[in-house]
Image (cartoon, rainbow, N blue to C red; front, side, top):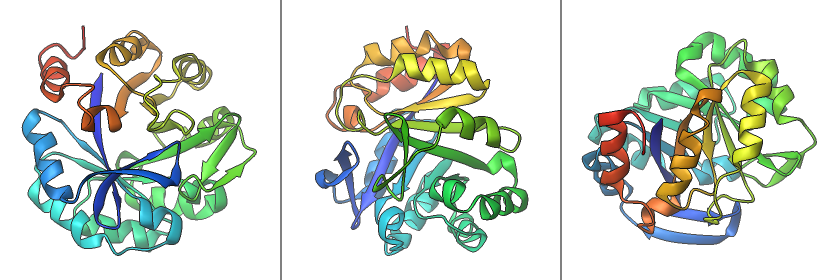
Length: 246
């Protein structure tokens, strides 16, 4: 099980939102590059980087920060936020990201999403599906659509290997992961799933590790790491030495 620390950038700062609400943010650092290096030094194998401004407002004013992070770390960077076209996808690869995450474009413009995957290569693209109850949330969680997460994964599984699922109701709330639903989705689709949202402790990671056999092979954690609910070295060293958290 790989644990991936999250860096969400808003107006040049590292922040965490509460349940996807842009009006309920907590700033944890005004130096995203230093934060990325701290995660790497602690033993992280990759970084999950999101541009919240681009996701909602198509505002790409954080490009220099994203570039600086990619230039300064030596571990892979997966990036999402505002990628709606092949041209934008190529721009972020040129900045140095290793993999991109497609979200809104998959729902709103699937033809363009297919074009991006075909051009970039499926091994460098992930799909992120944020959900709120039975609804899928898009445009940085600001719009809900009545679409099935399971149906969408099955539809895109022929192109994509890894899917990131975020329970918006739990994101930033430290209430624990949506374990039962994640297991249900993984079993129904046979896809590899990155669990995101609600991680609050090392125990949550142990619980998810117990269902890894169903396809839950990665975990993204943000607030729990920033607020030291989880010790970075404990997670990453266990992951490297034992490929598990026991």
